[in-house]
Image (cartoon, rainbow, N blue to C red; front, side, top):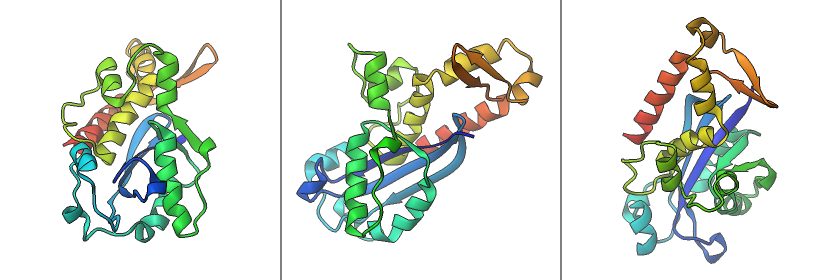
Length: 219
């Protein structure tokens, strides 16, 4: 079983060492490239103001955050959720840098950079001459991001989950191959090798659940 956590954060700025803080964490669980429906999501009181330039990006203001929990209040729940799983992040050094800064303040173990699967790096290798931000990748892979008027950690994690499956060849390749096989083979989670890569075919039910989960997160 391959368990991965698709993760994103929103912050008050770009540099944790300049006093900027996390204000939202969104994480969703994926097993064998299929979303399970389990998620972790909190808005966090940064105990500082949210600059206008950051507010224009995510629309999360100081007034909204003043009654939200502190990072230390949700830290144990967060670490319990991610466990030792791989973390799928777009521009991983940014998010891990902020998370480790917060974890250090409360003397909790930092997240090792080796745990991250950086989709920004994957996309740059796959499309070296193209834009590879999340919006551009959604457009390339025909992932509906029409509700993304502003950034949001949970919404962006949901979009990234779809993009990640595409970047690793999972959905397009396995879905097209599965369509030529019987429903019985799909339901048994048939596994086939493509070159040296193992592809796990999602069932029709799993595909429907995946679509419904993404729709719920983006609504």
